[in-house]
Length: 293
Image (cartoon, rainbow, N blue to C red):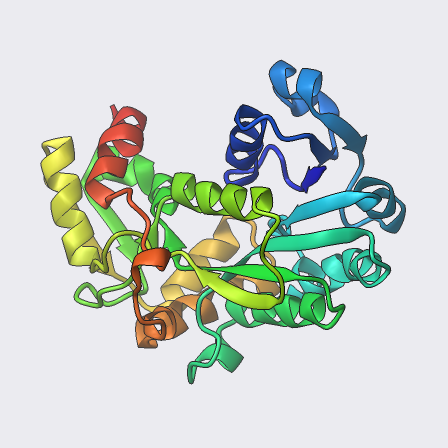
């Protein structure tokens, strides 16, 4: 039995589809079971509620061979602890009690770098990893870079104004991964019952690219000029607040982007096993282009 949290999320729903396609028994935790696709409701066991609720996680994890743990976004949270370690505390109690055989979680790159302690959301995510590992459960932390799919947040200005913005310097090469590849790695780990111990598993995409590279590729795929403009951290934070982020989340997201610009995501040496196939060009052709037409 494999338990998937956030089964309607950007990564979670793709993992559910892959597990069901592989014929695995799947149990999902859903705040609103009616939001699940009919095919998932028909084939997966559904536990209603929040995976931050102790009674829900005890029921969902009981007898689980593996769990995909994803802390849900907390755009309005009062603190980053509420988003990560606080939210994960009931799950950690369940893991410590032996209610799950193995755990795979979505986390972040940056462990061991000079920026790990001052990277806002990433620092909080790494603390979540530490809390899960302290339970002793066999664990794989998916150490992730930024997602290609995040560019969809700027689909509007890309389509209407030919521009995208960010805190990262235009010439800073960074790893970038598609959520489809992240989901595939997660599903493989969940289906593989042979691994033990605790470790990071970076997912780095096929190559490091700068935002200048990304703008060039988008221009070619969309057949229109797309320019990238670096903005100040202060302007980035103000934009987050204007979209409804809490001060804690705005501060944490800004600190993360400043750390990425310093080298947070460049601390891992790329290996074939940590390289995933989807290129940014392929992602633009299949995902971004239909979104901006």
